[in-house]
View 1 (cartoon, helix red, strand yellow):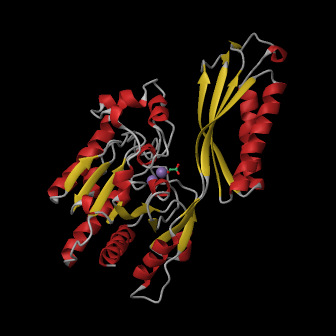
View 2 (view 1 turned 30 degrees about the horizontal axis):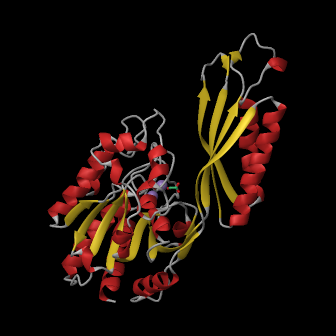
Length: 400
Ligand code: GLV
Ligand code: MN
Ligand code: MN
């Protein structure tokens, strides 16, 4: 499975993945998922929001155990963020069948659409729509960098955008959702464990800063006559770093658009996207507040207009304690070891679903902690340990 997926959507120069929602690379990933389902005799379906499901047993019976993750990527992402969870889900099902576990509860494997939000700017679109955390109206307004709206992109990929929206009946059939994911930090490497359990996801969000000045000639415009939006933007990037340090948070400007984007022109517009996260909501509020204050005062000093738009926000997620404890018991059963329980600054579909369904996550060790980069990795032995842990968890939940 891993070998089949590896070349899909990988850029020949960067070797990073560009599996963006509703593109041909995404379609290839979806084709692979359907093939895996069909090859195992699972019922394959695409829900109203474009999420893919593979079912062993009839989900209409309810109390289903569901596992899975996503197959899309960030720009030049790694091979593991998302796909490790989906591949491990199919492998764990194979392991359950090998063990002869009777599937007394329906078992589902899911590939959530557009988790990274790389194309339309909002993460977890598939799970947000399903959980009623994104309205169809707001989703219809999402637009990619080329001006293509989400509904047009869906249509072009053969999905009916008219049907998107909350799907409470689907969620009501799920008794537990477990997402396996490569760790996006080094906690497991440092603790010496192959597998860990998630405790919480930090509150996080994305803010768009539009600095508007005046385009002018880079050679002939006196410095004093310029209204250059790059200057307050640059001050804002530095302020973000200072504020994050001060408030035990992280703050990143990782995407920028400049108009007219000419070497010899003072820009008319600098648009930067801030991603900020913190363990505590108060810290996050303080960081984003300070960054905005700095941006405003520098914009004013340079005669530049500023608009700040919050494009998305996800409050803190505490995963279901009972399910977490049960998984800890299942994984610790044959050993004296306790499985590490860790928080994360990364967002996940599991976090979105946790408002509607008892949800848990397993993390697989990442030796460098690098993620959202082609250098993302996990050792094969650890991936196998992840599959076996997921199989143990699914078996334990099915038999419970
Ligand atoms: C998704 O991986 C995110 O944390 O942004
Ligand atoms: Mn990611
Ligand atoms: Mn992910």
